[in-house]
Image (cartoon, rainbow, N blue to C red):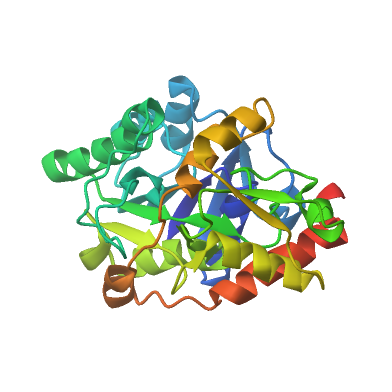
Amino acid sequence: MKVMVFGGTGWIGHKIARDFVAAGHQVSICSRGGNNNFAGAVADIETIHADKKSIPELASIFAARKYDVVIDSVPQENTIRGIFQYARGLKHYIHCSSTGGYAPLPFIPCNETAHYEGYDGYWKSGKKAFDNLALELCSREGFPATILRPCYISGPGMLPLDNLGGRRTDFISDIQHNVTLDVVNDGQALLQPVHADDLARSFLLAVQVPQKSIGQVYNICLERAVTLDRYLEITAAALDTVPVINHLPIEMMLAKHAGHINEIGLRFMAHHMCFDITKAREQLGYVPEHTTEETIEENACWADRGDQLK
């Protein structure tokens, strides 16, 4: 099949493109050139330089060629509408959403039946709106959409999640130098990662079973969650040390680290983030190839080597 991957030079996008090539599909990448960190890894794949946010450029892409599958790792409302309007004969559209919209979770582990909205305006106007639009077009107009919702994405290629809810460059150094790490509340909130490779593979799995996956939403995570404290312990152990942890209420953390904290990320960390992947396992055949502990360790070691600076 002919496959278009928007954002194919990005961290997740390039992995998706490579998986589809390996499976024998004819793949094209669309990139506006803003993120070329992984361009070398897909140098052998046809790249179209265009801005998907521009409707004329989007229309031009689909006027020039018919694609069976369109994948968007960072969807926007106008691109969903543009793909629906201009992608002639499309068989499958898949975009990457997030499990963050379930927070605060109504039950644990949380599955796809839970209310999806999020606790701030971004989720209502962003992820929720994009997912709803794709699913409404699917239901009303036959748009062949599938939504994948990963949790915290981890693995080589991106800095680890830090104790302040972001991915700061000095996090690994702080652990190695026994800097006290403030951790939100009691450190017992659950955190569940997904390895970037497992997430990328889930797009291919969805395309392989369109009769099951079209019109559906899937949580894509590893098998189990760990507490925030345990996450820091695993990260530190990979660096041959132990973390120095100080528990603080969330409002105290926000005040103490004002200007140096990812507030949205920290508020997510204060909630349990623990998800059920039964639906993806049963309908897509999704079985994570990585464990939670191995993924956390691998990410810490990669960041320690300084590969992200090259």
